[in-house]
Amino acid sequence: MSDPVNSPQHYNAGGVECIEAIEASMSSEEFRGYLKGNAMKYLWRYNLKGNAIQDLQKCIWYTKRLQEVLNNGAQGLAS
Image 1: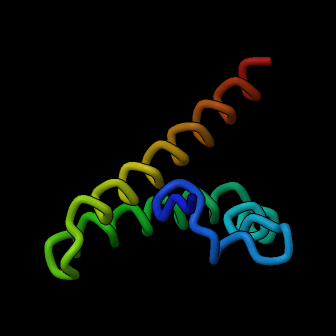
Image 2: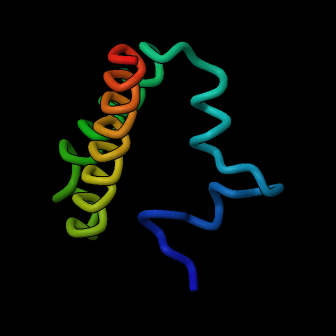
């Protein structure tokens, strides 16, 4: 069963997860900005597209991913 929030099937074409390819193509600062921008986008328009809960879940997904990236960076700085 497809999970449209955590692992949309259309973002995993050819066995490559789109978010991983995007991260690999950017500096860590750029990727953090990308995650922040997507979280803001989904929060901004959550009540305009007809599926508010799904858009809020996507906002949370991007926010959590940003938190993970920041946590991993902070751990890297500490070691």
